[in-house]
Length: 272
Ligand SMILES: *[C@@H]1O[C@H](CO)[C@@H](O)[C@H](O)[C@H]1NC(C)=O
Ligand SMILES: *[C@@H]1O[C@H](CO)[C@@H](O)[C@H](O)[C@H]1NC(C)=O
Ligand SMILES: *[C@@H]1O[C@H](CO)[C@@H](O)[C@H](O)[C@H]1NC(C)=O
Ligand SMILES: *[C@@H]1O[C@H](CO)[C@@H](O)[C@H](O)[C@H]1NC(C)=O
Ligand SMILES: *[C@@H]1O[C@H](CO)[C@@H](O)[C@H](O)[C@H]1NC(C)=O
Ligand SMILES: *[C@@H]1O[C@H](CO)[C@@H](O)[C@H](O)[C@H]1NC(C)=O
Ligand SMILES: *[C@@H]1O[C@H](CO)[C@@H](O)[C@H](O)[C@H]1NC(C)=O
Ligand SMILES: *[C@@H]1O[C@H](CO)[C@@H](O)[C@H](O)[C@H]1NC(C)=O
Ligand SMILES: *[C@@H]1O[C@H](CO)[C@@H](O)[C@H](O)[C@H]1NC(C)=O
Image (cartoon, rainbow, N blue to C red; front, side, top):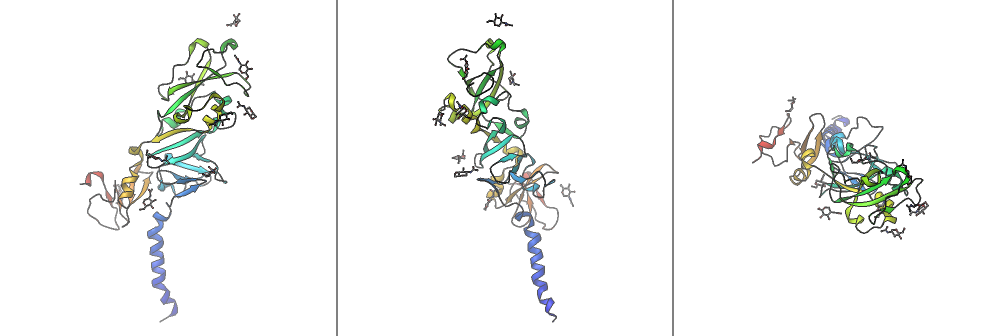
């Protein structure tokens, strides 16, 4: 036998292994600093477009990581991811504009609808930290609920802590003082214990968002059935990559007649 022939079976199994494992190997959890990114999050980058690992997560959950791993942003936006709780389908994020040491001085805007109208909700576990500035004729708001948070800012700014944060139902701006008004979500648990001197710190610590499982698929159920979570951006649907190579939905436990090697999809209505 020719010596090279001995390597053929090895080569064949290597190739098989490569192709078989391709989809799963690509979707190993990725790290950014202390964060672990896995479905529906995935690690993209500004230079990798379209990114090869895009099917590892949902398009709305693309995270860009700074070279030193200190900043994980939602696709390079102002929204920085501080921590993720996969069990609760929630994350803590900060808004980069107010995450500096002088955050209080930078609060002349409302958190944009662009994140709110995506798959994320800013939950009512946050409280609304409200700011009044550019007050007409320089009149300062007065009353026990207002705190003068001007200290290091170049223009006067006053704060008061509102109730639960609802983006679509903003706290009533205090019209008495004819000031500009903005409201920021802050962690409710921290807001309860921090004083006005810590408001920049409070803004830096971010706020909690959750995401709708309905929009990204029930990854936990897929994973519990032995599968790995994937997202088909073209079809805009979640699918479950099963150990036997099946492309199932919603889980690998979905009943369907197996015909390996062909276009194989188990739909929700095929379950039980
Ligand atoms: C990572 O976690 C360690 C320990 O909890 C902490 O000291 C450090 O500041 C964290 N690093 C980042 C970039 O969050
Ligand atoms: C994540 O969320 C779950 C369920 O809400 C909770 O029990 C758990 O303590 C949270 N984990 C962390 C690290 O906050
Ligand atoms: C923020 O939203 C509130 C409520 O809709 C509005 O009254 C206020 O003018 C907005 N502030 C800015 C800076 O856009
Ligand atoms: C500004 O405040 C001063 C003193 O309180 C008052 O006399 C003046 O009428 C105010 N001007 C306007 C435009 O409100
Ligand atoms: C608010 O604080 C700033 C600086 O800390 C001070 O200059 C200003 O007079 C204060 N305003 C009022 C109404 O006390
Ligand atoms: C004012 O700025 C100084 C220097 O950046 C900082 O040390 C101090 O904590 C700030 N004061 C407040 C109340 O934020
Ligand atoms: C709040 O601010 C004060 C004064 O700057 C500081 O001593 C304290 O540690 C801060 N508390 C928290 C929880 O950050
Ligand atoms: C899915 O489950 C495997 C273990 O079966 C685990 O290693 C993996 O991290 C899980 N993936 C997700 C996205 O939960
Ligand atoms: C695979 O299934 C999808 C969705 O049902 C369908 O659009 C596509 O044409 C199928 N492809 C093949 C090769 O059968």
